[in-house]
Image (cartoon, rainbow, N blue to C red; front, side):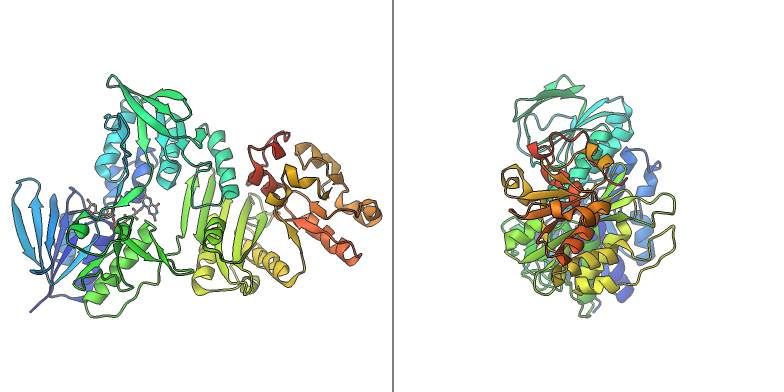
Length: 565
Ligand code: FAD
């Protein structure tokens, strides 16, 4: 008997699973139930249509029910909601949302890919028509309509991926945009000092940032405006509110069917994407998976994992033995002229998990400096203390971020060490990279640290309270000192060090600094060989600024460092 497979959800995971099933089994019956009117649309592209970069709406519809159904012989039922599963009878109850008719559909295997819904905090006034969330084409149309109809001011609530993409898109459309974020930083998966350049970029682009604050109330001011009150007491009136405060797995169907869920409501699956019922698979934003780096459960709602998991579920239903290796959270985001990307574990996660790690920062151009257009990258590399295994990386810069994060994502995935990064052979010609690519340089710096060729002090160890215990030597040229620096530092430009090193007092530990940490590393090597104990400020004054941004340590600086200059 040919198998009958029912899929719930027809976008990233659901549509991928359906197509894969058909490629593996020409005879099975595949029924796809999708509650909304569309399937297989590009949710990741939605903010860019609002912003006007993707001009034609229909480009976002990758397949229609008709085109996908015909190509893969699928029975696609849009506007059909799955409302209950009878696991004993192996049937799923569906409701036709047009007619209201309900019916039971038998299955041999079931795949759940219901995704995650935007969280709407239960705040007074949250149901106002101008307080919107963004998940599907209908949501996008409504936000875009408000902008097309003349909205001039917007509040974006939440500084994660979707909030930042919306802030950028709404600015592109000329709106006056304010972004409020509960945490003291945007893009929470990044470590705070790596988010600091994004704050600078958002403000440069005209987004008003309200960090460490939260909405407490919305109040309709007629139909055209929303008055918003924040926890700090700040009030503002805007034409549009975009809520982007996170997502919650859509797992009611699974819960009601008695499938095992975690505490946050995500469906628990094994590495074949099987739920606690072996006939039911689940994939995508609704599931908990393994952390690919250190193991343990994680929930990371991203399109790539959803697609790969769907393929694995389909493989297993068709008798193949495919296994999901886990998710490492590789992601990337454009924020106006900057790009931020990460893979693997962040420093804050490593701390939470009690894992021993080292970190290094590298600042270098994305291609050779002598070829026009080279832009500075800031790379943070995290690696295991004993073995040097790469555990995570974060990169911010205007160009070349995507290439480096993808290389580092593979390094994390394959368990490479920082020593192996020294040896990585990457494509090079002057417009594209450097004979010593930023990835190689990250490997050199990290390996120097592991081998003891450099000792470091970190920006957080040199805050105002701790600084009195250090002698700080600034190796920059005198002309650079006007751009800010650590108060009380002794200035000895690097070219003068061999003549003047005797001036450095030895009664306290010595910290060496320059803009990026490169010249101070050269100074470290010189001084070390002369028998002077010292440490290099890792990441230089740039990372010092980002670490202490907004604090007294950098209050006297005339301007932030130019990220990507
Ligand atoms: P979805 O693609 O959300 O599909 C779930 C579908 O199931 C929905 O259409 C829903 O209507 C349907 N459904 C739910 N319950 C039922 C039911 N009971 N009956 C019938 N149908 C049901 N990820 C990235 O990696 N990079 C990005 O740049 C990126 N940008 C994004 C931008 C936006 C605005 C959004 C919303 C998401 C973005 N994502 C991005 C996340 C990515 O889209 C998701 O991780 C991915 O779509 C998850 O796939 P899924 O199949 O689990 O859920």
